[in-house]
Length: 141
Image (cartoon, rainbow, N blue to C red):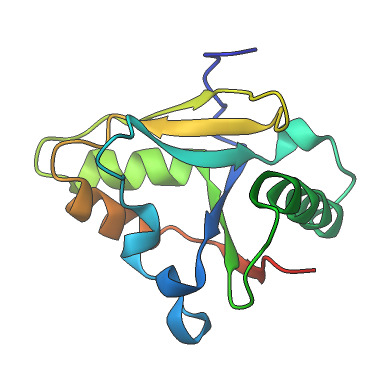
């Protein structure tokens, strides 16, 4: 439901454009906010109710293709664990930042969610989030 906190044991995925993953290596810039954003767009993987990671990734590829109309070659899907992100940022940010990861479904993307409370110092927070990436997959089918 919109605004629900995603449990710490669950996983989220972030679509990373090719410029955010040059040479296949995801960079911290993949976790930067745009000027007009209040949260970092992610997808709640367990919400997809798939039997395994392979199925989750396939479903995410379908979602990205439907939303973006084109998934660029070289784009990546970063997989992260909610609790690890929150703990890393809480313990290693100067202000002991408490991130919120909330479900924020969209019409064509019911698993859509967001990471909130990234500003200020979102560049430092992005570096910490990058350090918690568990897995990366090609975003293109």
